[in-house]
Structures are given as C-alpha cells and as structure tokens.
Length: 71
Ligand code: SF4
Ligand code: SF4
Image (cartoon, rainbow, N blue to C red; front, side):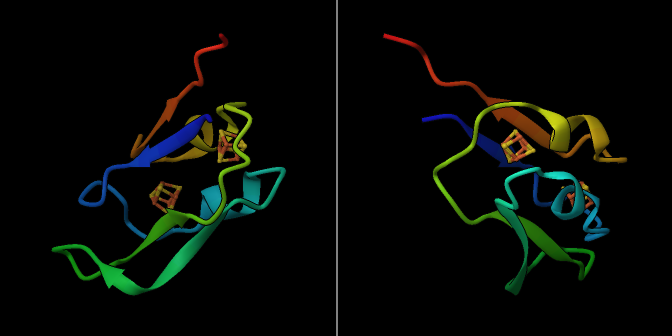
C-alpha cells in the first residue's frame, strides 16, 4: 500500500494538498494541530496511488510519498 507521510510541524494547514489529490484522500484534521496552532492535513484512506501530486503542490514540502513495493 502506498501512503504519504505529512510532517506535522512543516504543515501550515493551507489545504492545497486536499484540493489537488485527484482521489480526495486527504482532509484537514478536525482534532490535530501542530505546535504553531495549525490544523494539519491527514490521509483518510489506504487507496493512495503514489502519484505524488500532493507532494509536488505542497508549498512547504511537508509531504513525503512512500511508494508501495511491487512484489
Ligand atoms: S499542502 Fe502542505 S502545508 Fe498545505 S495543508 Fe497540505 S501538507 Fe499542509
Ligand atoms: S500521492 Fe497522489 S493519490 Fe496519494 S495522497 Fe498524494 S495526491 Fe493523493
């Protein structure tokens, strides 16, 4: 399963990744904030295709895509 890792402290809660994920797999947390007080983005599914659009669009380079190993 591919997934993304979001660096909580780099995220500024802009929601750009939410807008750009073609599968709508990212949402803004309604309970988790970082040390700066921003609500952070979080993955809401296990269907990530590792397309990396979210990582490319994040203005703060907070997202790392972890691509599934094909077996
Ligand atoms: S685009 Fe980056 S900074 Fe903006 S909400 Fe998503 S992870 Fe956070
Ligand atoms: S890598 Fe692609 S499919 Fe996965 S969360 Fe980011 S934009 Fe969505």
